[in-house]
Length: 404
Ligand code: CA
Image 1 (cartoon, rainbow, N blue to C red):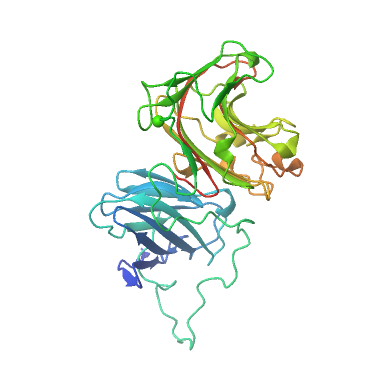
Image 2: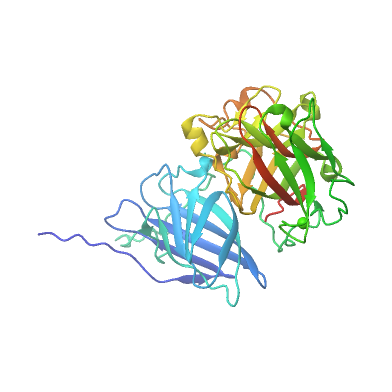
């Protein structure tokens, strides 16, 4: 009986300032990979760029996994959806970078925390196949040595590259809750029980059972938060509105807040956040939920992001209850693109990258949309059924990522 051998190299090469190059080729496996891991560390945190090269057959989706050597914790990621369980980390492609031709590379990154030594992760794998350390794409050298190194990477970017550049990770650690350029509000300056100062309670069109209050029993930071008692039915809506918190940016907004709520998003359409759009007759860009998952809705034409097909809903995410969730979304008025992070992870169904994607944004892209946002409203509005009690805290708006 013929035995097939599986050759995997397992050393590590450190090249340059903290860059670790690892590669492997499985002689009998369909998939092989090379990984370049480049961390940028400060005293308690770091960002890392992970470049992966597909040395096997073309794939339409990928997962890169690794094991942290220390207590590293991923807090946010870009160009991949990253999850962590203990020291085991899994990064999955986002909508636009899942297809990877043979020999093609893609990169993603993440931000994290650590204590002690930020040791290099081990056990990199690509679609379940270990990426070892041999930095060459084949296990056996060619019998006739080429005079120039074999080409292992494409010289032009892959055709699946996004049309807008990915968010640049910060090179310095952000402040815990608010980057320096942001307008931030943790509601700590509120002195009464009714939202005041730069915030005002509003009930557009009609008012009913919905109420809003400053709450000193529940807070994400400090001792104060904004509580929304959201009731069912449109006229029972309530919002707390600020125009000044959008003040520092003119055409791109990163809106970050923490929200804690008590009832899972209903099947019916609801909105929890609304932003008036001066370029859309003042109609709101709404952020809420439908079919149990987060969604954007454009009031002017009722377009939804993602589309509410089962596949589209599955590309969004529920909003976990009875815990503080960090929500951040980008709205770029220059090109109409959007991106949304839930607890630091980009949600593929809430990504509007300008390229129609089945089940996500082909409806959204039915018309040109270049929003100019003029206010931020936090509250609750249901168009059929669905009530909720919510708390908001640590709102930040700026022209760059705030993170969590
Ligand atoms: Ca607070």
